[in-house]
Length: 303
Image (cartoon, rainbow, N blue to C red):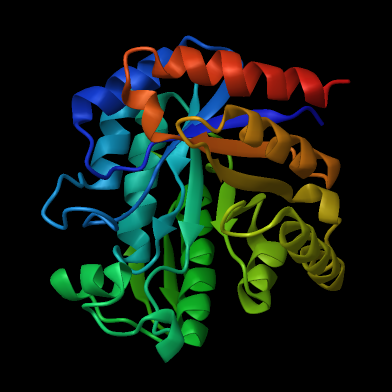
């Protein structure tokens, strides 16, 4: 399987016009296969009053103004929208995009141990949920809700009408039209790190994504990938069915380091890398990314 390189534009302290320009430039660069937004309601760094557009609204607009890129959220917070509403939104974006959506999902806001920053004033993610009146839940409930959401999404995308009674959601006479253009619905990407969440990946996901260096060293990514292999086998799936995807942040002067990191990731079996950089929004930013990171990394993976 060839290496695929995607682009992520985090919606923090950036204008719609700049994001649109970057995505349209990427749409004209065949070496870039996909583009992603994030799903936060407040900036996670810098001025807390700064710009942070809502992700799915932005994704719909960008789907209408691009023609080639696969696209999605990396990843959708499962805490922000009821499952059936999310299924309807995803179906609509898949139609708008002509069948290019990848359904990126993650657990979303959960209560973390005290050393992870559990006070709203100390942890930006906790403050974000408090600001929008969304309660944090336990990690175990978050994982159970994630699995329920995947089940509901797949039924919405493939069944004409159904009822559903789950631990958190009750649906009666649910219909969803228009259906996604992709016959069985968009492929499902799940962002996960812990073993309990990786079990959901092993059972349900087409793609698995995690942040890579500097958040997680390549050796840790490899260790998590081996855990996923084991869980896939336990779930009766071929581990090769789940595509491995890693995010890489590129510093303004970090092209060489990014190329080295991508080479290390491909060496452990990663075949999808999503790169992001604040430099993208400069006039020459996308040309720099293509010539200094994307094209060399792709060519190196083919040798």
